[in-house]
Image 1: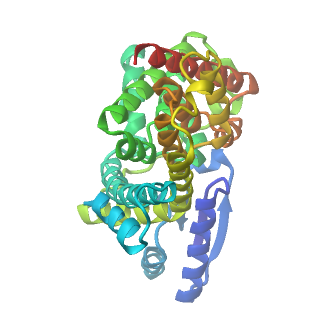
Image 2: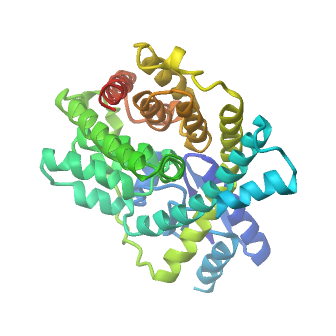
Length: 81
Length: 315
């Protein structure tokens, strides 16, 4: 699974990244977690709000930090596909 | 009810004499703390639910292709209801520019959004009453419109970083939200925000309570009264480094007003705190050339100082 955290590195982006890494660990997924900090690239996903969560090329979350449980649900759903 | 509670704890539970300064400061602290925290919880939640209807993508759509005049007004009003965090200022600016929204209109949005924020409103409402809170909103929106119009008239599009005009935005479908999702997200947002700001609220109310109980009644009239023409610019200068910390500053301003700080000076101070923030300038530097940031800061400073003088003169 390909996971990207979109954001310039603000505190919210770091919290989202922490949630994602914990969720990946708890679910035992094999995933690559990358960060996108370049504005042009973030905008390429159509986002105007950070942080953003992109899973397998699809924008799942924009402009908020979802709770750990929600991140787990998102990742679990994406891994079933 | 809350006052009764604060009095019961101060006078009965702790047995303090109501006429002492300590008792007065403590009663004031307890009363304000409980009231402000209750109001913050309710209003931040309510505002978050309202804001879930106005994602920035929607503001962008509503503002593109509008006439200049209506654009500024719409942008300043949308700035109130669109969720905004200064860390998203860059993508928001680019998104607006890419949609063909004029520079001045984008600025009207970028000014009103942080200035008219829910935390500042709750505290103004709770500590000063509805009239002052509405006055603050109206003034904030006016400042955002005026400053945006001025920036638009100056035709400074060339002072935006060139790469901004080359970015092409991708398409995303707007998220469909159910009421349950709005509720859950707003609740989570409220809890997160409260966790972050409560220490500032307590410190602010604590300092305010100390001033309330201990500072002499005409303490500020002599130094910062309406007769001192420098009071407004100095208040603005003090407000800038307190960036966006409305939670901690409003309770102090309230106590200072009791001791003679005039309304206009207080409003100017609050606006400097919320709208002129150094971190936000640093973030905007990524899309604006330094000259444009300087012009922006200068226009905002002049407008805010003018607001201060105006309200000192008419109120």
